[in-house]
Image 1 (cartoon, rainbow, N blue to C red):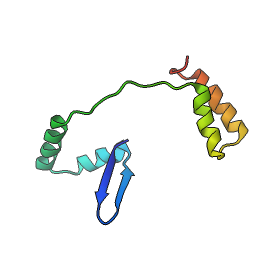
Image 2: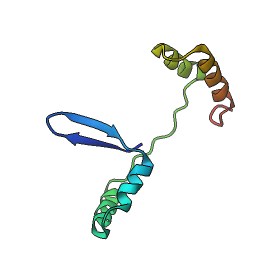
Image 3: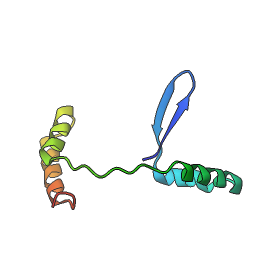
Length: 87
């Protein structure tokens, strides 16, 4: 998800959903869009390969928060097992 850093007295990082980012770009003038496109071309996005963690490690992260009930964790484990990343 794209992020923006606002710098004032306090630095705050916020997440912007991709659909919202597209709406923002759609609202730009032709000149502003060209500037954005030039900037994107100047700094290509660095892609990193997906690093798959173990299902047990993922579940341990969720369990450590103590925010999720056992039924949810059980469903999560089953869902992960069925997901394309873990088949």
